[in-house]
Length: 252
Image 1 (spheres, rainbow, N blue to C red):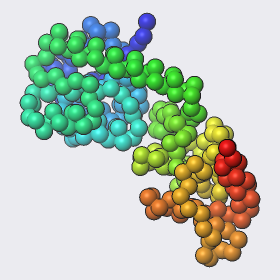
Image 2 (cartoon, rainbow, N blue to C red; image 1 turned 45 degrees about the horizontal axis):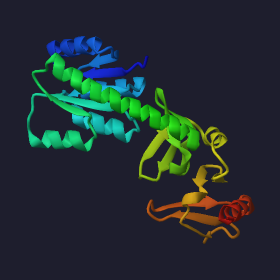
Image 3 (cartoon, helix red, strand yellow; image 1 turned 90 degrees about the vertical axis):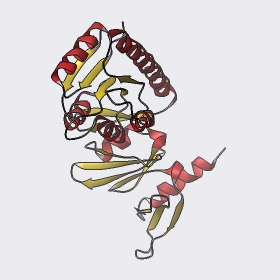
Image 4 (cartoon, rainbow, N blue to C red; image 1 turned 60 degrees about the horizontal axis):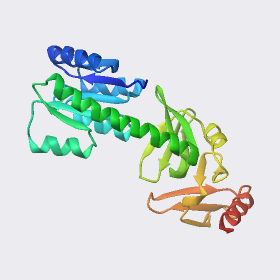
C-alpha cells in the first residue's frame, strides 16, 4: 500500500486541528503542522513531503509566496490551497504554482477527500515518471540543507565551487541549486558528458555554446555560456581531454 506524506500550514488553531483530523481520515502521514509561511518553508525543506496543504493568509509570509520559494528551491511536492478568499487573483496564483486543488473555507470532509484523491493521483503519476526517468536517464543526487534532491544529468549546464562547503548547480531552465555536495562527488555520479575544465568547475559538454582562447593566459581557453553571461576557464592541462570528448560526441 502506498503512503503519502504531508505538511499542513494553517495559522488558525481550530482550522489546523480540523485539517489534521481530515488528513488522518484520509490516511495521510502527517510530517508537521505549522502556523507561518516561514515555518512552512523550513519544515518542507527538512521533510520533503509528497503533499503540502496550505492556507494563503499565513503570517510572516503568505502560503502562495512560501510555495513559490519552495518550488524555486527544487521541491516538487503537490500543493492544495485552502482559503476563505474567492479573489480571482488568488485562484490564478494557485494555478500558476501548479496547485492540484483550491478549497474554499469552510471545509467539508467530502470536499477535502476529493482534493486528496486528486493529489494522490498526481503523486502516483509523479512517482511513476521518476521511476521511468531513473531507468532511461542518469539521475544524480545532491544534498540541499536537510534532504537529497534528484537531478537529471542532462539538465545540468555547469557546476561551480562557491567556497569550501558551498557549490552551485546551474540548470538549463535557469534554475540554480545550492548544495553541499562537492564537485568530485557530483562528477563521480555522472557520465563522461560532465567534464572538469578547472578545479572549481564542472561543465556539461552537450550545452557549451562557444570556446575561445583566453585573452590573458596563452594556451588556456574560455568556455562561454552566452545566455547565462558566464565564462568558465578551460586550462591548458585539461584542453586535450576536452577536445577528445568533443570529437567523440560528434561521431555518429
